[in-house]
Length: 238
Length: 238
Image 1 (cartoon, rainbow over the protein chains, first blue to last red):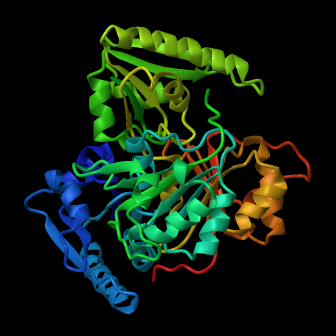
Image 2: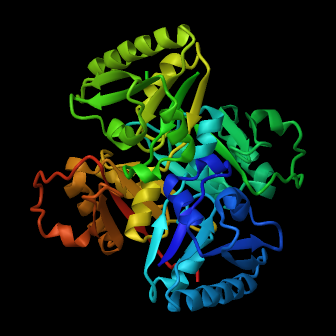
């Protein structure tokens, strides 16, 4: 069996009981590293990885050209397939949730036709960011829109207008563009910026407080693991 | 401290380590029951609730008129506030994630101004349904739209058109309307129906297979804990 195991947003205590049990019993674990950096997934799970486990590391380049990353997943999937074909279980570590912007989707696409796969869901970054920001997201008939900050400004704008709550992932170097869109819509005062939620160095602050640092068109970048949350209108929960 | 603790979608093993630790150490726990039914939240956590814990039960009526439910949360919040004011911690149990269509939002609104609150995020039903359906949701620049099936057909239609992936919550008696919208859009063949994800009696099936049972305008209802997931377009993860 191939297990795709969600590890949650970063705090090791936000792993599920099932994730911890599967990792603690694993003979083979697999995980990606991005461009040679330490694996965030492995760091989350480090406390429960058995010392004797074999570790399959996939070094995934981060480039606009997708071919090198695809080749890295091809090679990783081949190594995992060897272990599975030999009758061994493999536990793939995935930060957050495996099917929500997760690297495991690339392995699932390559292996699920040939092998049994079980996906163990994890706490997603959206839920974690809302929790640390103290920001209830949606209730009753409200809609939540989850977007990537990489989208063009006009598309961001259209999507933000239509939902009661918005989570903008992958802020990174798109911070300036996102701030401009929210400012134009008169919504920047309701937006919260969250970085590295649930980790020791997490940061939570009103987005409006960051705008003064942004010269128009300036290439200000924040970490990849950051998010902007926005809720609009009246609170329906009183 | 008031803890709002997410319990995940139903399988007790999908509680986080932190949720299990806080509940196991709790002197006072609180949870809602809906219209007198057994509390789903309590059932998920049952294996870790200490026998000696005091239990504050809020019986919340399910009616279109919101006033009785609001009164139930008012009364529950008052009982919780008494314990907090006496210096005791209270752990509120929430199925799924506390800030994602969760009952805890109603307590948070009533108590967070007066007491310290920590929210422990949980695995949401969206991530759980995708996992059991074997359905990768979103990658790279894709957008995920989370909707309630209670919305009018025209609004459902508009929102479904604009996103690469859609999760429709609260299907219940709105199944027929949702099927009609998806059929009109030519998308019903890509939709998956999931009921009671991660529980022993879970059900996962193509939505198209359910349409034959639906006479036009028929008041067919499925359980409240059901969801329709839809992904469109090409898989970007190969």
